[in-house]
Image 1 (cartoon, rainbow, N blue to C red):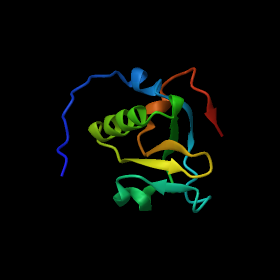
Image 2: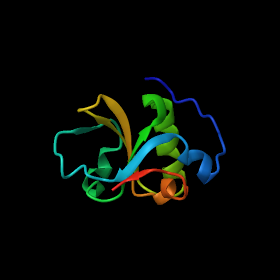
Image 3: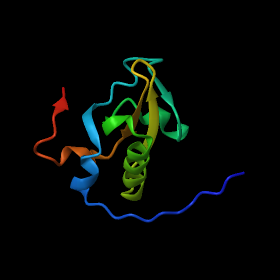
Image 4: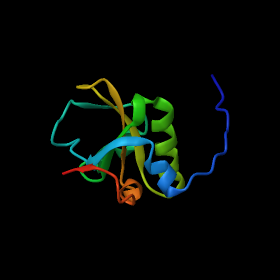
Length: 107
């Protein structure tokens, strides 16, 4: 078994928001089979609401940082795989990424 390495980083809410290129309201339940849960399957029942975020450059590291930042703020978050696009996606109920005025949000 591999032990996790702990790395402590500090980010502002705004800095975290720059890790995704696209964010929108969750549509996981509207497109069954499109998203595979990579981790935190205990959140699956919550994914009918919340938000989806696609990390810049399809970066797993960015997805992991976003997920961990949301959890640290007391919210639920899971890393998903968008099977249609073969990309990482972060689902969360944290409105974190909607604080930026310049963020382009799909309706």
